[in-house]
Length: 214
Length: 199
Image (tube, rainbow over all chains, first blue to last red; front, side):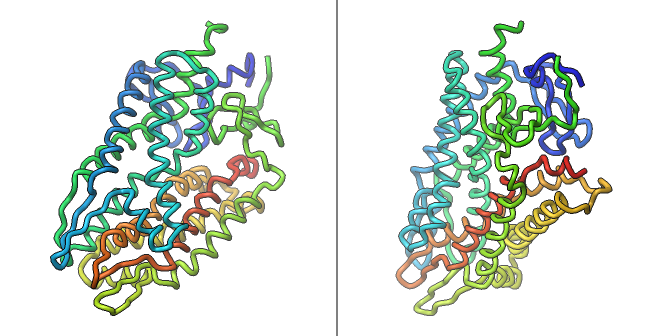
């Protein structure tokens, strides 16, 4: 294969599921390109990626705050009322001396999701303003390192499993935060699964580095 | 003009940019992070994390995950004990979820990683009947879901602490969390280029 220079490698893409090499082709706005071998999504094209990303990250952060300040679930057991919030789940682990699990949970369900959304907001805001060429690179690297460690979706399923275990022992009331968490997880899934980091890299390239070429 | 062999193209594990494989010291041309810098240790790092994870998985299954204290009667239940209890008390779907998350996924991940780590060193599975890239992708995708049981224990422990009835996390919770953590690290440390080199 002959290439003009190293930058021409940007027109190539390796499928993240089966490692097949593809050449990138221009596709219509709002459509996606699929891998010819395994059918997974290679990339999408969204002409308003920055606006979509920015608005969804802000909405996500708002729901994240709501999901953390109100009670998640409230139970009535033997005449006593108890409720939990997201921070309370890992603080309770610390109180019981489970520092390792507590620390891990704090990172997986609180610190990393919060970081991802804060980074996304700053990143998309900078891209919108077309500023911070080097800073956006640092942010994107950091983002791809912490992305696999955010587990809000798994935590949501865990709440449901825990509640099913309690059926019959206690009366269960869903709190405000539970609904906020569902919305947060939906936005989180959309942002982390649908907007791939490689698409933001391509967008950044179009914004900052295309002057010399086209 | 530069001439490259298609087999020499690799994907940056951080930003997914396509790079030319230059051997030992690869720095991604787009994000600047080093691509599998510890090439000369090739699989050792991944093996080390994997073995740690497997060792931690033993106490995770032997010690109680959840300790219930009801009116002074203290009772611990292991992962398998909890699954059997749920199955016998009519919550089969939940028993299946916990079984998949706490037993099936971790064991499957251990087996796939062991297979991948051995197959990149020794000539097995070379007939390309199995797509090793796909297998690796699957381990990365399903791995985090084994955290379900740890989160469930955390939620129950935070929710149920009354005067007479109390649930606390058991030793296995720490062991299990460590095991999941190190399996994730082992998967991340695996050098995907090795699959290609051995095919």
